[in-house]
Image 1: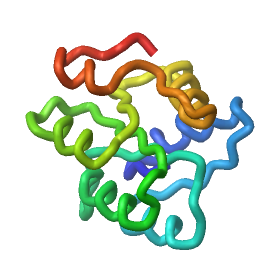
Image 2: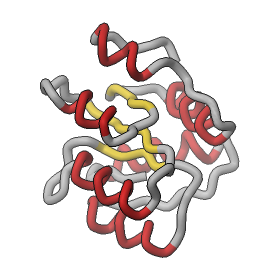
Image 3: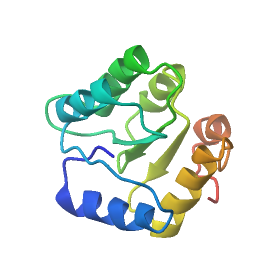
Length: 132
């Protein structure tokens, strides 16, 4: 998981602990990419807005390192354009902050099982969040 806010990293670790996931956390895009050079996880939870490298920049680099790695983009912002850019880079799902632990568990569990919770393309087109 990649998020610059310690509270979010703790929340995500708690959510994923219940799934039996071994979690590696990074507080920046650069730190995440260093971790990803050494191994390929089952999925990545990636914050969109971070100092330094933003989530889309990190996602571009992830695609070079691990082209098919499932990535969930997390954001509290509704800026125009990021959804299309994320979809073009192959993001698998996104979570709107604030999210519940249940949302996180459901999305990650679905990705690890090879399915998706909700339809990302539909969410982009309609501007609404699918019930997770």
